[in-house]
Amino acid sequence: RAGSVDRSTQGSSITLNSDEDNINVVIRVRPVNEKERSVRERNMLEFPGKGQIICHGTAPGQKPKVFSYNVVFEPAATQDDVLEYSGIKRLLEMAVEGFSCTAFCYGQTGSGKTHTLTGPPGLVESGASPYSPDHGLVVRSFVYLFRLIRDQPDSHFVLKASFLEIYNEKVIDLLNPGSSRKPLQVRWSKESRSFYVENLFMVDCEELDDLFAVLEEGMRNRAVGSHAMNSNSSRSHTLLCVRVRKDVRTAGDVTCSTHGKINFVDLAGSEMTKRTNSTGKTLEEANNINRSLMVLGYCIAQLSDGKKRGHIPYRDSKLTKLLADSLAGNGVTLMIACIAPTKSNLSETINTLRYAARAKKIKSKPIVKMDARDALILSLKREVDTLQAENQHL
Ligand code: ADP
Ligand code: MG
Image 1 (cartoon, helix red, strand yellow):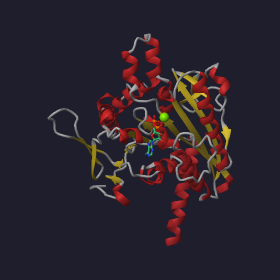
Image 2 (cartoon, protein in one colour):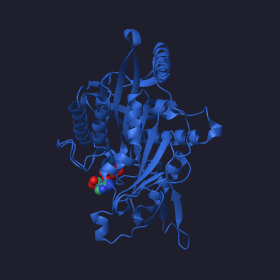
Image 3 (cartoon, protein in one colour):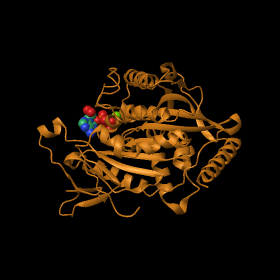
Image 4 (cartoon, rainbow, N blue to C red):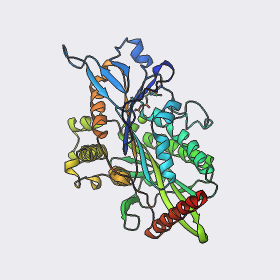
């Protein structure tokens, strides 16, 4: 797909430069907030279109830095724009077909990660209608997912959702807050050849409302838990996972299943890596708070550097273990890098833009997750379908 598409919508709030990789990187810039406006903080970013961002004032007397991405959501972009143009729909379509997909938000605290995923503070917890225009990508994705499922009446679907938090390398079940006293273990499953969390609540979701209930419950527990632990959300990661089993009936009444999933990850603030290194915390504490974030950074760096393939340290943190299958190529990953436009945030903004540029280089080929027997049946079914279609043309 050569060339770039400029699909700017009203007020030129989004620009795209589209090609399809297995990691899709988009940038979202939040608007200048009230506080910044009241002190007349300078806006340092400029958007010339075609997925470009110009950063001014990086160093005295230096030329502005120019970064280029597939998609840039400018401050005027809406939550709906993010659903339509981030590529998330493709991830959801793939999850339904048996791939492991991940959408994660990366960026400094206050850059809009949680806003992008779940909307303004307290919206989900307040039980607002799922069709509220402020809802973030998670709720919008749930709606789209159910639309996809309704469009395939010949298949049977089983959806299960889980919602966890990783704080200080401890896994806490947000649907079972008692687990904060006894953190859950991450284990390897030989059968599915992937990591999983032992004893994690999996909620059957037959209807859209069931998914909303999972999100609402988890968000409420997160708010209560972070208060109790005297922690704050900028230090922890949350991972909401929807598993999608699809049963397809083939000729001769044989059923085969695909096992897809979509992870939504709200990462700890990216400034945490430096902050903990520079304080007087014990090495272990410092390591743990950021371990998942730092290891994710290493994994992305290694994956993007084709030469070093094979030494990707997924096992070094809880988060990367749980995301390994989608990062490693069983699916597609969407990274939403969130940035603030103002001067006081500039150095973090540049760090995030660099991290995003590095992630963009990752290339892998996604594969569907299913048993060998099911894979064979499905490939035979496809062959039969093709032959039947050809017959009809004869
Ligand atoms: P983070 O999760 O990265 O720490 P938040 O999502 O909590 O940041 O955003 C900080 C504040 O900025 C919140 O009040 C949020 O609603 C607001 N905000 C972030 N992004 C946007 C946006 N695109 N449009 C409007 N408000 C935003
Ligand atoms: Mg947040």
